[in-house]
Length: 567
Image: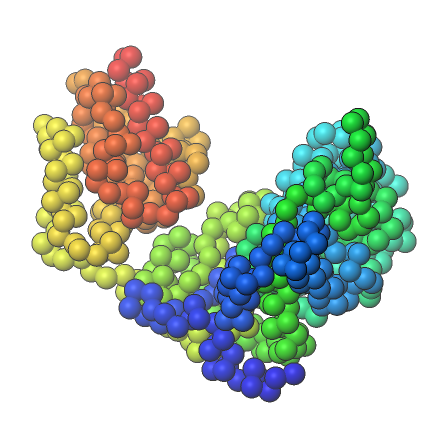
């Protein structure tokens, strides 16, 4: 092991992405559960492959092809060694965890799941370990049983055992919760399942980057993971499967490299694992994944795990000093992530305020919508750790959270815009006149961040609607946050009341209301609202996912205008 790697400053120096500033602040990256940063050795490996080693694998007799094939298959051996697999034949390369789970659902599931059979999973699963089983259960007329978790975000082995029946064929379970960081008791569940001849698939997306793994000791039947969460390239991962099970399964995709012989009306298949790898693979990604594994092995997974355990404990202790902060998920054993809520602040707004200080976290439902609904919340703020994180990162996070609580979550806009923000538009103004006024306001700011803050201030100044109007009928679906819109018609004009539980979203709906309020319905219908918001530049101030919500808001305003015109 490299003693030098134990020093935080030396380890952080390996990650070039950390050597930059965001909004004038040093980057504090706390979003590794979504995707980890890459060490320089992985970046160099990818560049060297494309510059000097690229050729297709398994197909050529020339030097470069054989060299690429050797590197590709050596990577398979590296993965097998890293996770303690029996041999490299257990490793099927995929595009990542999601594809690996879908491969099992489409091969094992279609072969063995029959009408009336049961698939057992939990409410805590990532959508990638839930939706494929929903599709399979519907296709096979099987039953998907989704077990609850405790309010602490933990799984009971006894509860799992009680729900295992003679019809249970497969258990799909996350090794580690991506949203809460809970380390699940997978060893005990695997052992109990195998007593009953039940197959177990583990979603290892969050296990691979953090835990020393040994498939032979764990004894699960399938283990699925992604490279990009473990310091490797995106778009590549693997499925571990017991060899006898893989031998028994049919291919998933048909095409080159997965065949032995092809005849006019039939084919025979290549040996495992190539039977499941149709087409030209992500050769560079696979080789880059092996480089990331070499990097992790050079440090030592036991060393990284011990370092992270101490940092998780420190993170939770420090977060609990922030007034009005609640940690969501209080399992005694956690890996990689801590989720929390700040009372009176929507997670998206907290994430935005943290970003302004150069702190990258993830906000929202984290692809675990059923879990969030079970807890009765729309989402959380998630701080997730990587090998490069330090106590200083957590100190910066906590200091910024305290600023948010104290009311210093963002910059104050130039006073020259105050009159425009506070004063409502006259109903006599045309939409074009209001657009011109908004553009005049926005031109006062050279910086896109200041323009975004201006939109947020519009939201702050939007009058809240009465709770009686926050109904399902008035809700705009398809937005990341909760958004409500209510309209009334008076003297041939349409008036809007709107609200949201997130400031940036509130700002977007406030801007639309400012443009449309008091207009004739026909005027709204004759205006290209999508072009209008583009002219203002609103889409450039929000994320791609929020653009979908903005589109839903525009469509709802058009619908309200259409209904008003008919009155």
